[in-house]
Length: 97
Image (cartoon, rainbow, N blue to C red; front, side, top):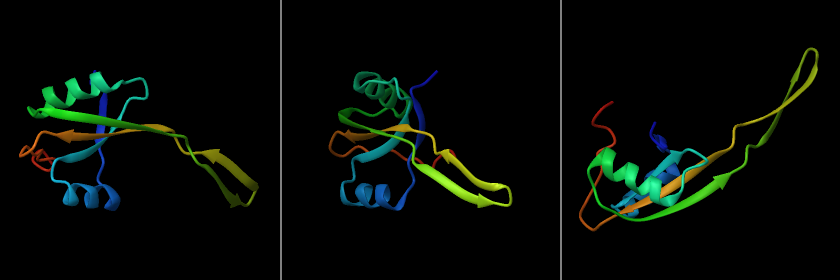
């Protein structure tokens, strides 16, 4: 099983990728470390990874009002990795869609 769950396609991540051509964001397993993330990206996309930055996010509290009262819950927590590739290398994330 791969440590990479899915790539990130948000406005903020797209702006980072447009500003720095060699940076990409991925949602990864919470137990994954930087070395495992680097090896997975290199094997999956056939590129050379220069550095990996990781961030852990806690789930947010959410509540909604229903007919039977207030329902509270949490969104799932996740870990995000920003991968910097070597100069001149790119990943085509839209090739298999």
